[in-house]
Length: 440
Image (tube, rainbow, N blue to C red):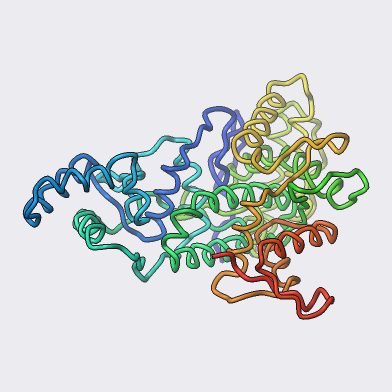
């Protein structure tokens, strides 16, 4: 008989708790993106710096150069060039590891909020890491500085990944994009923090859009943006119906359903499972009668504890999961309860901390999802990746795989933007004959 898919003795918790798959809590969500960038780079390289302060690194560099320089006063030039105004962090991505120092026990020396966000990216990376070293193009002095650093680097991961992927399609593109940036270390320095903000938005948005469908593995779901040079209009059907309004409504379901999922996690499991995997495991379990009895008992107890109407027992696994969803959401519908207030705080914090860079208020159209020029150029370069160029419709597909959708009107504005940038090859007036190149 296969493993029981839910905890033995399943019982409802007194309070709704959210532990897995979500970087936001109802308070304390200030993120230091420099730290997060350093941790993600550390995870990608499986390299870290333990108990090595930056000032000690500077002293070690001074000692190394004093032994080689005939003119000792030249050290002051090196110090002004690389250690004033943090210039050293702009010569090689490896120096960003100082932003995410680990301790000897291997844990990240970062705040709880940053750790949650790093866990999100650790989940997107999964078992992937960069097997080849970064090929920096450095001068002699910079190479020497880097040699000092490499002597203090250790292998390891300072954030442990304890979750199975919730959005496998996004894992795929994230790994491809990390690999592409690593092939261009100077571009990685510039682009990695912006890329992480793109993916934090995409992850939260796509999980919210997929959260109520656990019968299938998640897929990229339409979420429409306009470009910041466009005017918003209520006549843009896709943007109006499948844009901010849809995202906002979907986010309201995340805390109720993910907190319900936490109760279903097996304590003996090495990795936490997404809701769709728990459902699949339940369907594949051989003793349906036992499982259904435990689920129905749980749902009855949950309804009684949350003071909800008791429903008839479900007669199959699918119906039991539907009832689980309905009850998880229903407990938050009474606006007079403290639970409803907590859920609103989760939504408010999410929008302010991770979604706001992609939201603008556009007159009568109200809140609208918007991509600015920097975001468009980054998405373009990531989408094309290691290829020389992509057809326009291929580029659009790559945008969508990352969770960013544009309607035909926005696509025409995008082509005009590319033409001004000079990175378009138009073979004919047909859209299929429009090729887009990277801007690197």
